[in-house]
Length: 162
Image (tube, rainbow, N blue to C red):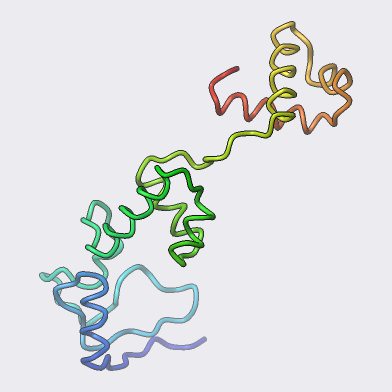
């Protein structure tokens, strides 16, 4: 088993970490810990009284100016009708970043409407369900697999229709 060991952190790297995470102080040394044994934080060497770089793991912190600008762009493009994938391409950002911004901004995750044939099938599934039919009976009537009916019911539930 590998032992923990302290290594010095160069001043330039300490400044980069402090700027990137909004930390007031970053320890001069870091503790290398064997894989699977680390906790959140920077280990020994941090001033316990100062908000160190581990502050990035706390919630409720105000986002940086760059994050605010990015979220504003995402919101603007979303309100213009673009979906997350198109926004990610346009802003040259990973899709997971845009998706996280969507959630943070309270935007709907799916902007595109269902194709007409899908909407018609879901309407028929809802109609048959309200008549008291089981999922298997609905699947047999529509000639689709039972898993398709289940997916349609889940989608209808998300939309608040069931």
